[in-house]
Length: 395
Ligand code: PMP
Image (cartoon, rainbow, N blue to C red; front, side):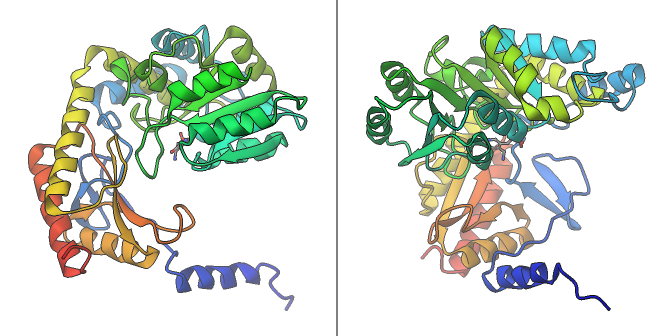
């Protein structure tokens, strides 16, 4: 028998188990809703990014079904071959108009949008100035571009300026990049001050609004709208996978930027486009952002209510300013054990530890949505407090 050259993977999985970082995938047996069915239980779902409850909205489902009837299940090729349906172009025009930008390109995921864009617009002689907590897809895009990467301390504008100033006489382009909302802490990137810094140093400004699309700004237009920076942020990335409720990512910006990405972004060129159902559902979701702004109001009412209730119980929810609510517990093993115990009690909130967050900063991440009722949130807080006391996380 030949030896198994992949045996080392099993050993590495054993190491993950020993470190308490091994996980099993939970199976949902129903749509992703405020109350979901998973692993044979009914649970209050504080784990998803379905911020506005659109993932199972009848208008999105109907749009998807109609699109399948008219266009079928798939597109047959990448966007540059048979993969551009009229509806793909219509969605891009709709998003561009919504975001008040000249143009938009949709990618298969937010990950592809970030990684595909950074790697397309920069070259090895260029420089990237990036927040230390930016998303993995930005980090991978930076690496793929082979540009020089300069990391600044989280949300530390002075440190970002220091990095920009140090590059003053260096050849090459400079890209300053931040998440709009940080996915693990729920804090908002200082896009206003970073944009000023980018302008002062002639840098390209890019923001990843994955957790701000549909959440921040008028009708969920994102951080550029939240800070009133229209026309000043060159590259705006968003996702269609979270508040929009479906799947995909997009880049908004100038016509030249988008045309360039059509020609040079590798996920756009080399990976098949969204199936009709996805595109149609996204299209319906953008209509709902405008037609039903009360969903966003409800999301924020729920966010304030939940955070205040957690504070009353004595929980530390860190620096979060958004529906992403971290509950600090310390060590990774404790976060995973806490999450498992919550699930047993009927609450689903993810345990997150190293390497996703720094060592000693493990947490439960609870994400409020517009679909939760006050009763769901009250019940969730009671479960959290009960389990936390039992596990000595709360006194
Ligand atoms: N950016 C951030 C900040 C994210 O949290 C995520 C999703 N985890 C992405 C980008 C990627 O988005 P998608 O899930 O659409 O690939």
